[in-house]
Amino acid sequence: MNRLRYIFSICVVMLIPAFVINARSNISAINSTQRKQLIDDAWQFTLVQNDKGEQVPTSFQMVDLPHDWSILNDFTKGAAMGNDGGYLPAGKGLYKKTLVATNDDIGKGRHMLYLEGAYMDAHVFVNDSLVGHRPYGYSSVLYDLSSYLKPGENELSISVDNSQQRNARWYTGSGIYRHVWLLNLPNTHVKPWSVYITTPKVEKYRSTVKASFDVNGQSDGFTASVYIKNSDGKLLYETNTPINSESNNVEFKDVPLELWDIDSPYIYTLEICLKDKDGNIIDTIDETFGVRKIEYSVSEGFKLNDRPVLLTGACVHSDNGLIGARSYDAAEAHKVKMLKEAGFNAVRTSHNHPAPSFLDECDRQGILVIDEAFDGWRW
Image (cartoon, rainbow, N blue to C red; front, top):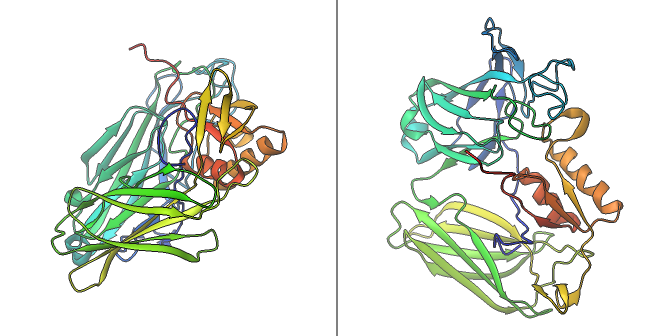
């Protein structure tokens, strides 16, 4: 949980829904006061091409994300995905949503789309202009929408193409099957995904925590206040540092923190507050982490916090059974709970990046993770 992506890594993404939406008119307002907005509700969806490769008449329907159009259809022997995909159809789909922006919204900071996962070959458009393309269906992606937005209504559309069958040896589902977020960032902000936490020294009640982060925008004379809080939100430690636009580093030396373990998965929160020359807070971001030490050798095997641990692992696909590929937070938590109750203390994510909420629950409930990237690479 020091954010190092080697064998037994544990990654956490905080999921905090906070937004206002008018579901009837399918409009989500861009609200610059909220750094991270969940925009799952009230999308328009239509199938563009069916399982036989035929174009189908456009017929939009209201859907909420996460969404998997394959699981909502009938099982058929002739489905293109075959037995690997559970005899369900795939094809091509299109999602649309209207974002309303004011002049103030356009002039303040950056507005980014955070797409956790869409299977597969997803293209993102704003007002018919291509913003970006992600072929792989399991990796999260960020798109900067700022230069594409205009005052008033903006049409956000995401096309998803799962027509190239067969493309997996398991059930993938089809569509935007994970969360979609809108990040509203001030002109000077902590760069998304740049917070990197390590624990170079790990001892019970005497560990060192290091954190690095990048800042985008004008930062002359700016400072950062960095806090460590416990699981109850109580402030434990703080430090202040001047910042620059490149990598910034802070360190907490020899702090008496509880260790994260399989049987006692203790989680802390590191919070970063950017302040301008006058001491006003202009941006705040937090990241959860745990303190633990991993070692392994031929003679002693795998050790967690200086004690040998026999890994009892399972290979876990990203779908959620009868609800298909849809990644609901409660379903991910229940999946981890069942694994834990069955006696597992480790999982391998077969064969791709899992949902952020799944990794979050593994941290919370005490499961080690082999975070696999992909199944094969042939062409």
